[in-house]
Image 1: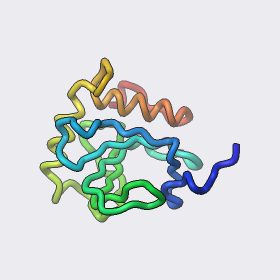
Image 2: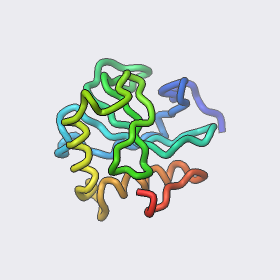
Image 3: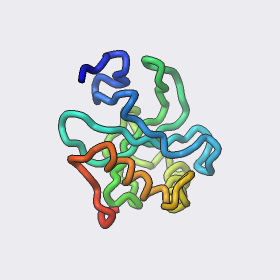
Image 4: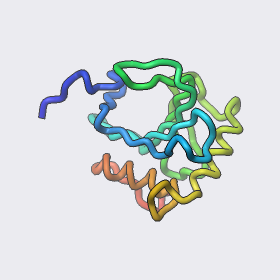
Length: 139
């Protein structure tokens, strides 16, 4: 299969347009401007994670760029361990309200699914990263 470079969202990470899943609908109770994304990872095996994004500030190749973009570990998900940030937020120190909203949201029933949001994040990661799955006991 040949990948068209027009579908590459981020050349640094290799994320592709067709490998993205937004986990929260715009009308959810997470907070204005906050989006939760799960990406499929290609190439090197990555630590299972999801992205917390907030406040769109522009676009790159037709996809949003955010003021806050944090990678959070899926393993021990309730601890909200920051793995990496493209925007300089290496901890939740300046983002405590957002962290607390996400902690609550993780335990709510997922949009259009019979599971919690944290279970839905794990499921979506596992669907898209078959060689690096997260067991339910690791949440």
